[in-house]
Length: 494
Image (cartoon, rainbow, N blue to C red):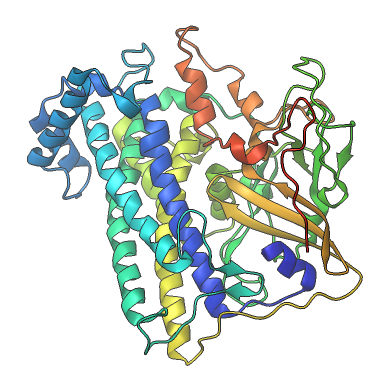
């Protein structure tokens, strides 16, 4: 979408920008809540230990940490009874694969129980914010309303069948409801886990070149953004360089990918516009090819993407909501840990998890702003949501980027006479999961595992903690091939 718009030099109506922004913000808020509670928290929280907790002590702890109204004794006791039923039945379901009782688990039963209680509540709140995506995008997760040139949402305040004020005010109630959970539960739980596992600020830093892209465009051309982005080399936020627009040459000219250690034909290092994707599986080769993932670089070096990169770049750019939530989180961690914890602690496994919660809170603030901007623009009489694209003869090249939940996502296209000649995607999990590049420098996953402690080699919980902190999505980063060279699918552009 943005890729083609970039190639054609198109502008996008303001209403379409705001609607897209709200869809992306709500989707990422949902994603970040799910990541902490349903996907990563159980690397740190021992649910079986939670059964030993005193429910009254848990309620007192929860009420001491925040003003969240869902931390009453009756609600916590109900969650504990529910968890006990799971354990006693022997059918743990989603809890079955946890490393319960692992020596690296060190939270008290009361802290474990509070986190388990919030795990169950999070299921409800991530569903609420996902309704915003469904209302504006027609369905979720695979939205149906976005098109090159804008969105398909018709705006008519007098029609019950289009986007009207009744729908918009319902969206606002959902945003406000979920914001309370993010600020008073997610941020607090993340800070508490970070404080109790403060030693994990020493592990998992890996690659500290950080890449993030600006997002939430506030004009029709993609030159003004609610959320800044850029590049930080070597972890030094004083050297932050921002990306200014959707046409930014600093971003455009410095992205490359290598396949030296990837199962594709050849050994090249190319710009995405010049790439091909020709599978050539060789089996695992320690010194050769060993991954389906390509190896992206920025300015010739591996770069870490994701919420940590995004938060550090926004912090370096002086983004006020980011600074507010970073400072608030670090202050709470310092208070609970009994020692000053500064921003340098974020360069770590636990820092990546904290940054994701900070970004979730920033997105909540941004969602409110996008809603207000949309309503204000409609009140001026502007109901336009789409500009029709035209495809000229000749060759056009374009790229589009988005700060997805897992980090910087970019697509690259070459169009010739109105048809796609080449299309490549450089996705977040490719940046982070990529194997060694053309210079044999390890990617972020590999680099972050160096020096991690492992208490029990048969149950490598610590390895999971670090890899899970990136929120890996290898389904996004790899290609599938039939080893008998049979054609799986053919797509024809018409």
